Length: 64
Image 1 (tube, rainbow, N blue to C red):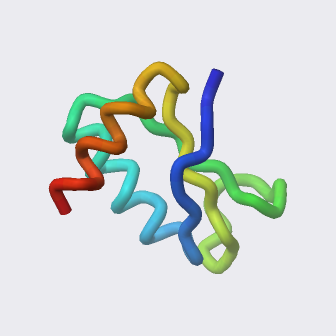
Image 2: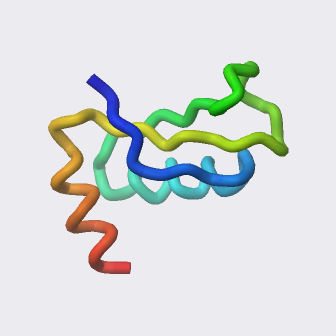
């Protein structure tokens, strides 16, 4: 199951977080909160990670 760990105001920031988490070895998905297809630049995006990786996210976020 995927859980939301963060929201971003636009696609560019969502992609930056996705790349950051994936660089740490954490599978990551981004989904528009509005339900529109991915690619809409100016909409809020949800950052999702597997539930079993949530503790790793907590550690990574403490580092920054």
